[in-house]
Figure 1 (spheres, rainbow, N blue to C red):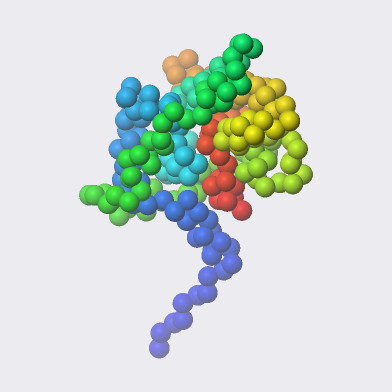
Figure 2: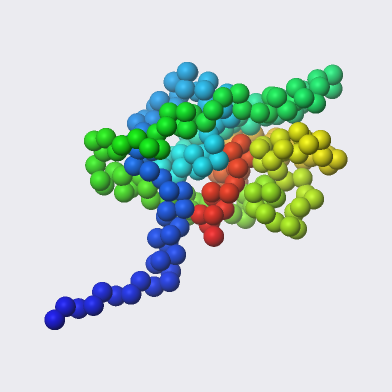
Amino acid sequence: MSVPRAEHTEAQVLDARRLQELAITEGEINFLWSFMQGSIMIPETRNALLRGYGFCERHAWVHISVEMSFRDRYLLALAILYRALIEKSLRALRAPRRASFRSVVRRLRAAGPCFLCALKVKDTSAGAARRERLDQGRDCSHLRSLAAELEPRWRGYVCAVCAEEQSLKFAANRCRQHLLTEMERKAPVDLIPWQLNMLSELSQHVGHYKSFFSFERGDEIDQDRAALIAAIGWCSGWRPLLALLQ
């Protein structure tokens, strides 16, 4: 007589569903496994990432999730990339007063496609990747754990539109994409001072986080790691991460 299989608890079902929130494909895992070995720092690749403001909303979180599944919290390459993107954003928003409103919008807008979308890695095959590697790369629990741990430190940076929070409807919290939408509509809300203060804080903390990996490493603090999460959210959007934590 066979023993009936135990019923999944509600918590187990919820956990399994959360691991699939980003719907990471085998092709993406196979590509990112090689990408994170150093390809991200090739000058041509780095320039493409800077032009495209990193990645699209989904791929930004796919990228950090896969990287964390293999490297946990060793995120030097991401710290370098997002510090450069935040500094680029600050230069755009600090443009001289003689610069036109339209030119500021142009500087904040991506000048190229999402690097991973352009390569169409989502629909490629797993190649010769082992099943163990694919299963490990699909595991979002490292990202979810870090984000949940640091949520009190990054929650204040979340875009009100991404979060769909009515209480923040008239707040200045915007990611880059939704800031651009407001600016293109010329909405009568002054969002720039808040953005400048926020980006200055992120630049400082992500820069400090980057220095943690150098020979003259300082003390890594939670706010630095939270700033990296906030930098990704600001550059690309917050919705995949917020869905992962629901």
